[in-house]
Length: 107
Length: 116
Figure 1 (cartoon, rainbow over the protein chains, first blue to last red):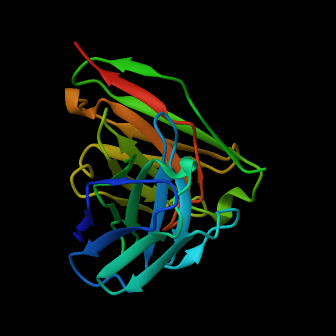
Figure 2 (cartoon, helix red, strand yellow; figure 1 turned 90 degrees about the vertical axis):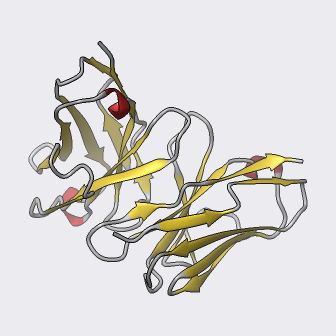
């Protein structure tokens, strides 16, 4: 099965910072990658799918890029509402998987 | 609006089974698959499997495939996930989510506690 590795596991940042989270697949997944945001006690929220397509209603400060094995989620200017945990997820083939998550904390 | 409403919290003993339901509304149910994802306390998300709401085809995570069964009832727009031979490490919040691939709408989650 394809494994997903996110880095960093934890990220400390300030409001207004540009933040980048990386996700690496153990083999090529083309562009079959999604990013989610999750806040404590809540279900995940889809941010981006097919590596770079912004889900409707998601602020434009979120963007995704990459293909093959290496992907990034960028928040151009971190807002107070963005402190949360972020997960990548591949959906290439018949078995899918999440990365281990990246917690974005207040610096 | 699209909604996925899950059944309530469950407490089970080790070795028992649990069946969680997920009732969909606000969209054409057969045209989207349903995935199941779980999250143990303080841990990350684990994809469990997916079922086609159109024809009932399934894909399961390899580590769960011997213990999990996903089914769907198009007459009630409801998906079900049954997990057997429960162990303490199955204690988690179980989510259903719409989508075959990326998941755009999620249920509220169902806490399943496995304890003797």
